[in-house]
View (cartoon, rainbow over the protein chains, first blue to last red):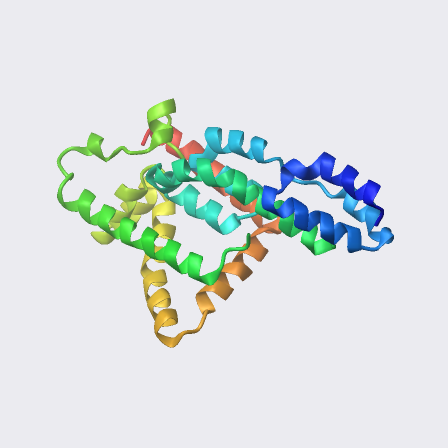
Length: 111
Length: 138
């Protein structure tokens, strides 16, 4: 794909990935065929900051984990009142990274 | 980040150990003072019970053989008891044989639960249970 398009994508969506992954994403996108562009453009990524807010407000019910697609962990948190509150607090620090990893997974299914 | 089998087994192990020690602790030491059992952050903040409040009381009633009282306190206690009975055996079996059946089952269950037909009824059930919890004033 053209470097200009790739850089545009990185500028708009760079915040959705881990910083160490951005370079890999750029390299992969440069290799990818132009026909994939329309699909990549329509991908909806989860915003890590939004997830942090959800985690703050409803983390002890596991809603943050449900939203990023970790249903099993979400049920675990829901059944244990956010792991007696401890897991909910740990997830406040983990959820942004987990969201970025999920975004990367989503992109990897396409490219 | 799909959870790896190592992470899952570690997490389940920690959860089970904490869960069993919590039941032992609440059953032996804190029996007299019920209010000390309340560790739920949600309840402390909002003064409303959360969907799984009362699970400890429910599990301890079930342990005493009083299934009906357990289900009346919180039906989720029954789910938790079943999970806590089955997973340790499954976990140890997997660790001994070196197979990953529990991890495969977890991933498959997650896929099924992500279907709309499955998760919407479950959410409705949890919400009904929550309303019942608030009504019972657990």
